[in-house]
Image (tube, rainbow, N blue to C red; front, side, top):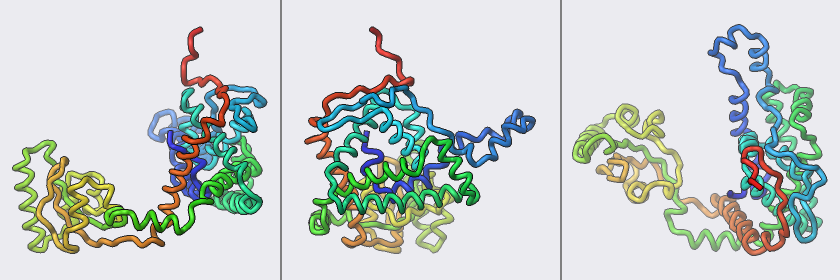
Length: 356
């Protein structure tokens, strides 16, 4: 499992909250179309209660809070610490909470390994790192609080009740974010701008290029290639005569991902596209409609609306995040598993206990 939390800065976790709340929120709301909701006022009241959108995390295991679920050189991770870690993850990102509730034995082990890695890395932070990490954690808590307050009608009492219902406190949340921040500061100590600039200079042009591209896909999934090509050539002719690209894309494209936007993918990294499409996005003259481009999906009529190569300053934080991920992977491969002495992971309720 990719490192899901500790590699992320607290600021990123705030964004995760904004995009993740819908998961449990929608899950918590009864279906307004069911006959039960038309007659049961209690269910309807619950559906309208903002706090009901954020149910308490149900842990998929039981364990003694004092039990050492991970033993490593220099310390242990207790059941209490692990529970606080999981509850804070859920508070900051409800989508992660759903993953926790469904976790099997291997997933629990991965979460415990991740948290232990955070603790070990944080233990290497110096006084300056500790000070900066704590200050950032405090500020981030206030940002998270502001976002939750927006969901709760700016009712601070409701926010406090929500935290109580979630089984978390401000000190727990700030403490976990502080550990995360410290671990990141330790990892990025060796990642300076000079190192990142070297990475940038060694990248190929495509990896630094974004483009806004309109396209119409004529799929070969349900038609013969020659039929798809004929339709594509006809559309190219209509476009070159001045017909509106967005209108034709909405009418003809077989790509559901861009149909409603008139075929537009805006400011996208060109490396995400299949090779033939990427090559057209990189080389086709801006503003002109090119000949149909064949891929495994069918034929694409492409118009590059703009294209730019990102500067080092524009890519610096993206490169830093990639370097942090690589730094964490190297720590896990070269150190972490040698430092962990023993896992004592509790049995997940989502998995049958092994037969004796």
